[in-house]
Amino acid sequence: MQTNHVDEPTKNIKDMTCTECGSTKILTDPRQGERFCQRCGYVLTDRAVTRGPEWRAFDAEERKARSRVGSPLSYAISDKGLSTEIGNVHRESGRGLSTEQKHQLLRMAKWHRRVVRSSKLRNLNTAMNIFARYCDKLHVPRGVREQAAILYRKSLNKNLVRGRSIRTIVAACLYAACRMTQTQRGLRDISDRCNVDSKELAKSYRLIYRELGLSVPRPKLQNRVPKIAARVNIGQSIQMRAVEILRTAERLKVTAGKDPTGLAAAALYIACRQSEKPCTQKEIAHAAGITEVTIRNRYKGLVRNLDLKV
Image 1 (cartoon, rainbow, N blue to C red):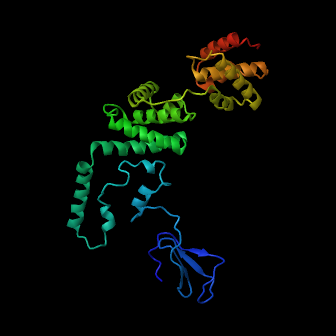
Image 2: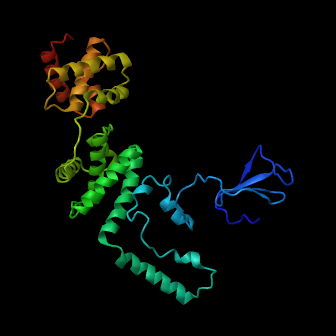
Image 3: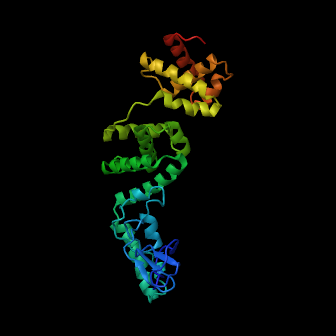
């Protein structure tokens, strides 16, 4: 039996014997779904359940483009794997093509990229490449990546990208997806790691939020505490105390209109003061990415409204 066409290497199956010759050297052809004896070639089963992908790929480039576990955003390729592309001409070498035919194929491929593909597809291809880089830098989950890619497609269909930086809109879609899924990635985190101006990022986010009619849940204050505490090495007991302060403040409705990060940092500073842990406002402000003035203002408001003793 010829097995040279198999994409994946054949696998040796243990604890199976050939019913014809009694050999234990049983191989599996994952592409054909067959199990056969290596010694005599007898096919034991020919309808094995394949656990591979449901699509087919005829070369390594196509397999990489369609793979769901390949690149970080392979699920969000611009044409969804349905468009026709002129393949790599250099792979045709040795197949009887003359030099003039190769030149013709190269010209066809060049004009195919220029003419057949629309401006939206070119924009989407560029955006997906930027998405892949930004997602690797931010280490966001797969669900956030999918949501951000969907938001960018909607923005592109509504012409929100026209006249604006693709990088900024991509970062804004990522920030919106993090807000919608309550993933802890702040505006400043995305701005710093993606090298995007924070003001332009906030402006683009407001545009997407307004034009797409997004439903963004209110951020939970207690989710901001662990991230700040980890940067200044604050223990679990102090974090729990800070969470209790924030929950009390929410119950008394004294957190309305206040920045969640500033409130979380102030509650953490109060918990440190109550636990007599040496931690300054400057250290917590630096860890939270805010100013000391913000911490002092939120600190005074929480102590006054909650009647805390520090």
